[in-house]
Image 1 (cartoon, rainbow, N blue to C red):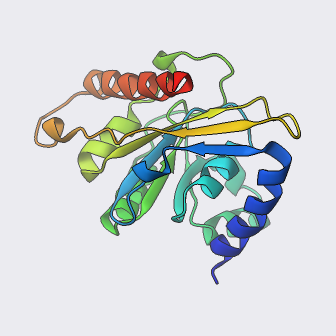
Image 2: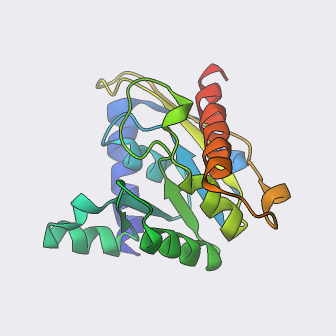
Length: 194
């Protein structure tokens, strides 16, 4: 068993008990093939919730600050995560994302870039649409509805794939990517009402 599989199994038991996870829409996750999972981001626990909710290994894009500690950097690397500089256009992170997708794996991104308590689709970074289009990969929107209080229900709603296929061969600028990413974020927020 891989480290990721072991960690996922252990955390699945703990988190299901602690946060009473209720999962909706798991049928929207394909069994194989490249895909990007995108979720709202309200807590440091969100990557764990997304990771245990999806039966496939997720390669998360994580803030570069987490990789400054040698032990944590090594652990995150073994779990398939890679760093991103949230302050600018991080070409290395984009290349790493496209490599994950090229191998038909699952890429995990939080489009807001950092934790946000208030819902505002304008917080979406343009990178999500860019990676989806350049990697020719569908986006699976996920909404985590929780206050992370012990023994209170946490809803994880997985939406239908967003496919940006009509843009695959178009020449787009950063404003185009930003608008498409904003639309993805709006879709994620809309899942709360499901």
